[in-house]
Image 1 (spheres, helix red, strand yellow):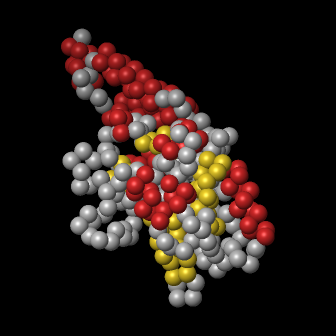
Image 2 (cartoon, rainbow, N blue to C red):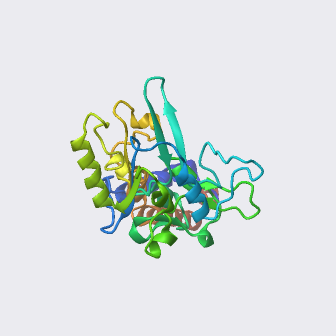
Length: 297
């Protein structure tokens, strides 16, 4: 079978027209809402004294090894395959603050959207958890998270993805996250997202001179279940909390994908047009053969 240039162009034009006719206008999908029973944390950086008791408690509650088992001091400087929760220190010479980092348990998580097999899901109480039986180790979750939270066990023979799961095993038994339980200053507290938001706004109204006038996570990146208050004069971005706007990370790519594929109508239409074109060309004799037949006649 040969395909003339004219036939090829006609096929491509027909396919393009078919696809264009099936693609609906790209409307942003509806923002996702936190579940009614969503729980989380409120971290008040003005109360934290950097004792790191939360880090020790997290390690013990989740069976994590020290970063350096041979060292007398366990002092990780970032999240890793052995560290789900960390306290950092920020200073610009004039202002300083401690900062607690762990999974944000986003209302619309980028890791969940990026995970092609559903290993990451928002499960009970809106907590984002990882199911190792579904994970293939692609690490797209690391790319999809704007906070750089999921970590990979590079040194393990059978590596896992490691991140804070809000001590879901303790919550399931009626407990609270270990980091909250041991905090001597109540710099981090646990509760429903609704309760934590109300408490954060109460503190802002009571002492506006103490805090930046915002609850990070209320709307940022579509909202998170871990919320932050920062000292007056210390920008959230300086503490490692990115300025994401109010739309969630997955909202834009999912809007585009759903508009283009629209239930796979566009790909099906494209393949249908191509199949018909191929079938028609197979039935028609090549132009040279047809001309030769006409001359012989």
